[in-house]
Length: 246
Image 1 (cartoon, one colour):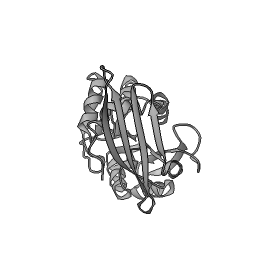
Image 2 (cartoon, one colour):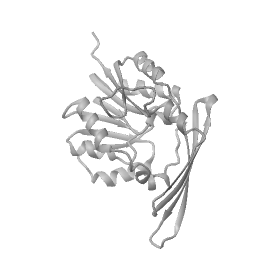
Image 3 (cartoon, one colour):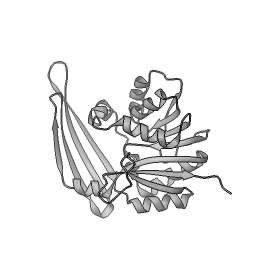
Image 4 (cartoon, helix red, strand yellow):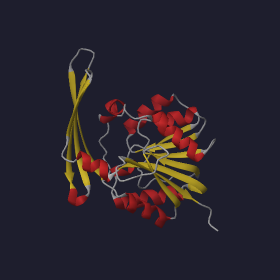
């Protein structure tokens, strides 16, 4: 099931994700889908990619399950006239519109089960025009195996956190507990505890699922680059086409 407890987590989400090259990711997306497109963005978080797309004159309808994440995205986007933000669940959303492209970044599908992923892909397919493209990423089995039973500690003076992974290999998932200690203006630390479940998906099975739903020409890249996915890729980026039916 999707994690619904993102209120406090949204406060430090951008700090946690500060190593991501959103500019590189967005350039890959724009180069793949072309100019002037109407884009559907699932699990948009705090709107980092949404903002970059809007600045490049794309019309974006973006949604997320967390209202608090959306509030931060709304502040970041400064009432952009080309962006519509919606509070929806990625497994059963319904929008009265069709789109030229769809995206889902930052491991969105790692937060839903394989069965929920089928519902999500079907919904995406039904919201796309013919001759459109669906781009999404996920953390790979190789990445999760490399972080099984690992504990990470981070400290930059302003924020300190301990990240602990608890794998459940039988059910192909990882329970993650993160304890954040954030310094305030009085040099006192407040504690934020975040517990998440991430699901480990297989690239071959995800590709087969996309094709079963109706997507064609599924290509998988190594991160947001021109290199193809391989067995040591930490992030797989899928590009799946919805072609006009003959």
